Length: 201
Image 1: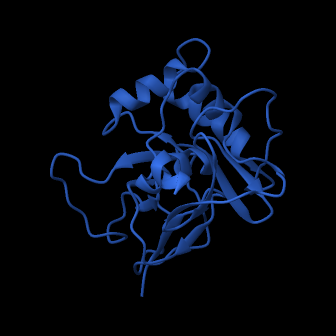
Image 2: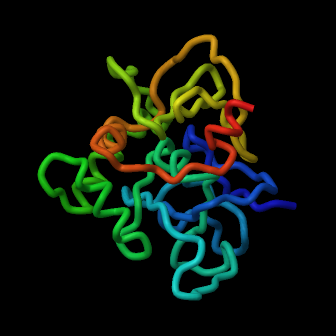
């Protein structure tokens, strides 16, 4: 039985057997007695995107009480859900991500800004699609389906992306600040199924 620790672009946490390219956390949100989520879906404004392999560190998922390990298909999924690169295990990526923000904000300022952009009344917040072209790595919602822009539209699933044709869009899942970082040149790491040769096939 898979643990409930996989994050969707809508920010929901689901139980699926597929593995992700990145891990991350929102603080401690699993129950003290075992490997299951508690009632909370975040325990702070710092929602991080971390490397699955860092300095050989190993942990049993959802066993400790330091943080709750979550997993993402890829970085575009994590950004859409409202997470940002970690300054510890992904320092270079985090600095490049911050370069796309006005000034040089602290991690605390970025976290507060993203928190205001990702949620409304405790639910995932959608944003109007900006005018003009979209950068690779942005995700949008069409009903209950998430779509990635990677030079063409690709339909998201926990296992990867597939070509498709969305009928319309309800809004942008990627928070505006993360969209701005992508526009400024930050390149989100995409799942191999988002490669252009696969998308066209």
